[in-house]
Each structure stands twice: as C-alpha cells, then as structure tokens.
Amino acid sequence: MRGAPDAALVARRYDRSVAFKTRLGLYDTVRKNENFFIGRQWEGVDAHGLPTPVFNFLKRVVLFQVATVTSDNIAMQASPLAATGQRSLGDIDGIADVVNKQFQAIFERNQLVGLLREFLRNAAVDGDGCLYTWFDPSVENGQPVRGEIVTEVVENTRVHFGNPYSRDVQTQPWILLSRRMDLEEARELARDGGDDLRPDAPETFAADDADDRRVTVLTYLYRDRETGTIRRYLCTRSRELQPDADTGLTRYPLVWLNWDYVQDCCHGQALVTGLLPNQIFINKLFAMSMISLMTTAYPKIVYDKTRIPRWDSRVGAAIGVNGGDMNSVARIIDPAQISPQIAQFIQLAVDYTQSFLGASDVALGNARPENTSAIVALQRAAGVPLEITKQNLYRAVEQLGRIYLDHMRNYYGVRTVQVSMDLGRRAAPLGIALPEGTFQRPFDFSVLGEIPLSIQLDVGASSYWSEIASQQTLDNLLVQNKIDLADYLERIPNGYITKKQELIEKLRGNRAPAAPVPAAETELPLPAGGGNGALQRAIAQTATA
Image (tube, rainbow, N blue to C red; front, side, top):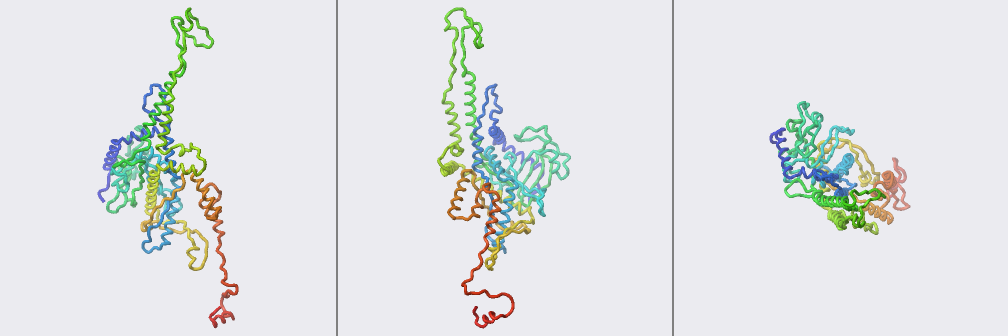
C-alpha cells in the first residue's frame, strides 16, 4: 500500500473532479433538467409581464418510463456455482437458503422498490443514478453482532471517480463522495472533537448556503493494491475527520447507472435533456397563442373623434353625434382568429414526442382494445424500446446483490438464522417420512468468502394488465387440474386472498404420507419385542416367513 492519504490530497482530487464536471456542463444541465421536471420551466426568463404557461408533458413521459422499467415484485436469488472444499452440496444449498432470506430482509428494511424508482428517476432526469451501501453498526437487531446494511440514493453531482473516462465502478483507482453536512454533525464524526471546524461555501450548483453552518465532508474510498480490499478516509477540505482504515470489503459499495451511455465518459445522457427543446417549443407556442387571444380575441370599437369626443361604453348609455351619416361615426372590428394549425401542431408535437419514447396512447392506457389479451400484446409491443434500459437496471441490481454479499461476509459475523430443512427428503433413504420444518441455529457469515455464489434476479410483473393475465392463467391451470391448490396459492399475487400463508401451511400439513400397504393379505406382520415365540422358532427352522 502506498502512503496514507491526507486532507490536502483528497481536496486536490475533489477540486480536479469538480473542474471536470464543470467543463462537461454537468451542474448546469442537472439544475436545468430538475427545474423543467418539477415545472419551473420559465426560471431565469424575463417575460416582461407576458403569460408564462407550463404544459409539463415531459414529466408524464419520464414517470411513465420509470414505472414501466421498475417492478413492484423484485427478489434476489443466490445459487451456488460449485461445491468447494469439504462441504457437501446439501451444506451449500443451506448456505444459499440463508443468504436468500437475508436478501429478503434487506430489501424489506431498505424499501428497495422505492429506492430503485428514485435511482432510475435520477438517471432519467440527471443522466446518472447511484446507490451507495454502507453498514450502520448502531442499529439494534437482537443479534450478537449489532448493525444492518443501509442503501441510499446519491446524486451524480456528489460522486467523483478517479478515472472520469470510465463508467465501470470496480476498476476505479479511487472514488469520492461529497455531501454538505451540518457543522455540529460533522464535529460528531471527528475523532478529536472537531472544535476547529468552520463552515465553508459549496463549490457545486447546490443552493447558496454561505450563511448556513454547513461544511463539505468528503468520503474517500480507494483500493489497497496489496490486500485488494477497500480503504476509507473521511475529511473536510481542510482537515481530517477520521483516519484511514481498512473496511475489509472487496468491492466498492457503489452501483452506477447511466440512462444513455456516452463514450469515454462516466456520465451519461439524461432522458430529459433530449426533451427540453420540444418542451420549450410547446410552451412558447402556448404563450404566443395566449398573447394573441389577450390582445385580439375581443371585438374593438373604432369611432370618429371629431363627432364623438368621448366614447361611453356603459350599457344603454346615449351617445351624442353632431350630424352626419351615422354609419360613418363608429364601427366594430371583428376579432382576429388564430389558425387551427397551431393547435394541431402542438398536439402533433406532443404525440410524436411521447410515441418516440414509447409512451404511446396504448401504453398510457388511452386506447380501448377489445379484450385483455389485446391489451397485454399492445403493451408488450410498446415496451420493447425500454428493454435495454430494463436490462441495465437488472444488471445494476445484481451488482447491488454482490455488494450485499460482500457486506454480509465482512460485517455480519455469527448470527442466529432461521433455517428450513426438508426432513422428509433427507430421511427418505431410511424409509422415514417426516414433515418439513424450520429451526434456528448460529451461522458464521464469514463462510461466504469461501463459497462462490451466483446472483440471479427474479422480477415480477410491473403492469396491472400483466398481473391480470397471470391470474387468469393460474385460474385455468387450477381448473384443468394441472396444479394443486397449494401451488395455486403460492403463486397468486398478494392481496387477493387474506391469510394466504396460513392456508398454504394448512394444505401442506394435511399431506400426510400414506400408510404402507402389505404386499398380500395373507402376509402377517412379525411381532416386535423380545422373546422366542412359536412363530420366531418356525422362521428360524424354515428360513421363511
């Protein structure tokens, strides 16, 4: 390992990364995209009192794509690649079962489905999405080793790569995470109390907080070339908060996703960036139409001032005229009419933009197909352009699963876990039939470093109509006796049947093994117990029963 880092080195690398992002225009792009997404589409424009309408169709398109790509039913499955060492295949299967239960607990505790939507939303609006995972040792969990794994979403403006020309996280020489922290909170992180900490100004596009009592805290992660593990150093731009320490992790705890790749750059192209010209054009057309309506849509009266010094617009009021032809005294100018092509072109621009992005009328639910099968077919066809984005998201979640495995191995220690074991299957060679059961036992998670595990992502339906189609298929399989009731209940979506798990356990428990049937009615069972009765002596003499 080279020399340990210090605050001056980290500050120089942070400044260099900020300069790189500034040259790319990242901060301006993110600020502009965020404003347009939330509806601040005339910010910074001097309208001189003219109307500033906002018809934010791009937000609907972005949220539609995010909702289409993500799923409410997502699960991670770990499976062993091969048996290693002296461990049997059954032991490795049991370890994989423990890991899968931990995946479920981590997903539930971190509300991962919501995090993934925010993660993908940031990628669509800002260009990049980032998930940062860390271990919080302060969480009380009832285990001998306190602490749980925490995952949070980090903005791309706060993530700085050592090699900004590569988007591969695990090949980076170092990674910096910056955040604005309250001064008192930063002092709590400092090992020496941090009494000399002072507020500083942000170097990024963040809101001006020069008067706030906040300081920029830098988390510096880098890979030790000798051990291959990740080391962590915490500091501000001027002083150290926590010394350099080995985390024991073998992977950087970050997941990075570009909405659309840009060659030789860690930052991607945002979906919103390509929609801004269309949104601005539509807003301007609406603004000019409003100006025209406000100035020319109402009838105007033109009168002869030589005959009528002042026009009285009161209802029923009399107007005096000094002789002459009444027809030449005043007349009404009909209001101007806006060309209908303007409204047609606005609608055409919106429709084309949504269609090119996969948000057609069928996908948005504005069409009226004849049946459910037609809805499913049309929605699948409309979602084809999003398959690449969807696969990129699944790959990112698989990388997150490997990070979770790394954290389990390094931080969990020995914990009590619930293990399910099919006793009947294991006792079958002995001729004994026992029901399935669960029990608790201690498990050393450090064994995960010895066993290679593959990560498989199991993702459910993200569309309401796909859920209905799946439900109808299950109904048909049950009616045709292709599956039993327990299998049907296990696969039915949540919310359809109350206390579903109790029904499944009851059905599984009622499957008692059938009693063995004698080979023939004339055969009699041999009496058990000690003694030497007449039947035993006859068997011993004839060697037959």
